[in-house]
Amino acid sequence: MLALASVSACSNRRLYEASHQNRLQECEKLPASQRQACTAEYSESYDEYRRRVAAEKQSQM
Image 1 (cartoon, helix red, strand yellow):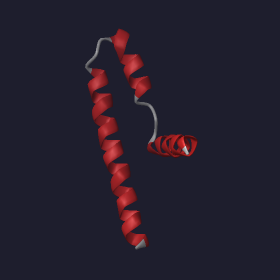
Image 2 (cartoon, rainbow, N blue to C red):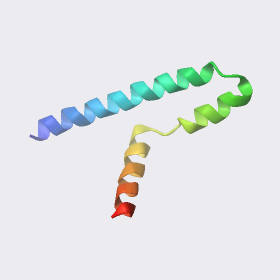
Image 3 (cartoon, rainbow, N blue to C red):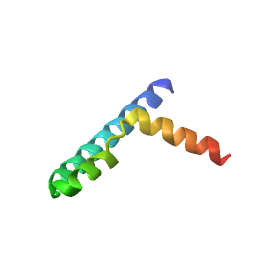
Image 4 (cartoon, rainbow, N blue to C red):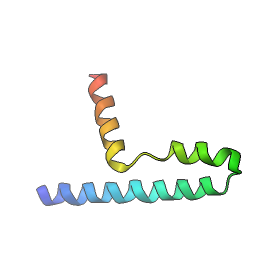
């Protein structure tokens, strides 16, 4: 069971990082005036994302 959870967590991280990279690549296509805001919006690491989501769930309880 622990191995399955570990594989799932790894897959979630990979999906997040792949999506994150795609978004950052799209940011690079924007004019310089918009590029910085776009990349700042997607600068959150997977670990930061997980902490933020956990904190949001706690605050909703």
